[in-house]
Length: 105
Image (cartoon, rainbow, N blue to C red; front, side, top):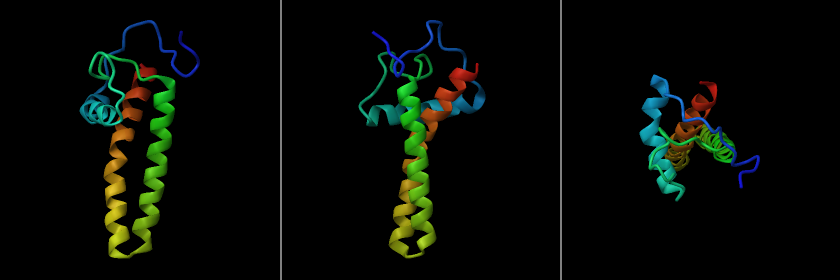
């Protein structure tokens, strides 16, 4: 039974815009890595739940903030770790873009 965090519209997923379509492969790969792949195998045809969207936005912000803090600190090791965190932030950012686009259409 759906609740506030898992409720999605009953209608089919709307077609995504160009930016979101580019993000779908990255979002799908991130969902696989998080062991949360949808039954349809792609977010192109599956709604992103409110819980997933909220967690993706939060994780993007946390990873980006940590990356900036590390990069600004200046030591070479911290800059490398910060760059890795920025790359890691691309997954939840892609899920956030797809989920937001679904709701705006």
